[in-house]
Image 1 (tube, rainbow, N blue to C red):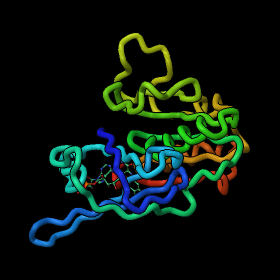
Image 2: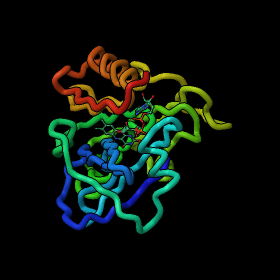
Image 3: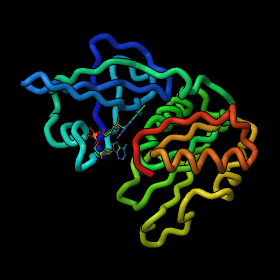
Length: 211
Ligand SMILES: Cc1cc2nc3c(=O)[nH]c(=O)nc-3n(C[C@H](O)[C@H](O)[C@H](O)COP(=O)(O)OP(=O)(O)OC[C@H]3O[C@@H](n4cnc5c(N)ncnc54)[C@H](O)[C@@H]3O)c2cc1C
């Protein structure tokens, strides 16, 4: 994972959860476009932060990791998205798998800066400690589970997100935001509905084709 801070000549404040489209154009005119969620708070005027996972066989993410350097120009459009946004709703449960934590981090960061007393918790699933992003910023509101290999001495949750982990969060009746791969989103949103979240209060965003 790498985070890129991009200065925007025509900045407008985003809502936490929104994304930008990034477009690459090759010298022969071939174009590739992908979406990336904004990780930063809209209080960061004039700039946005994107956090990009490197997929070895991908077209766009390796370009960012291997080619883009500080000072380069990149083409972006946004912000986009209508319903996967946090507009200050009370009692919020964020459930992220892998890079799906990125838009949830924008929500958490923004809430810390604007409404620190508003109940918001993050349940974050990663495979190994190496996959954990924003580790220094997770704080007390976050609960992490390692699905493959927990770090040495880890006493917290391991394995896939389960009902206990979501019930621990004790925010049933509020709004849930779930983001990650298709399989992750299916499983987590099903669990949330089984555990007292009305289906209409579970908002989802899917990042990729794999489970
Ligand atoms: C609204 C939205 C927001 C997103 N936000 C982020 C973000 O904040 N950070 C981020 O890293 N990504 C994010 N993504 C995913 C991103 O748009 C790209 O799909 C991803 O970076 C892969 O692009 P690529 O060109 O590198 O790979 P591609 O050339 O598109 O694909 C290469 C291979 O990887 C598989 N693949 C594609 N996407 C994924 C995936 N997400 N997970 C696993 N396998 C995949 C493909 O099937 C293919 O086999 C978001 C997607 C959406 C729709």
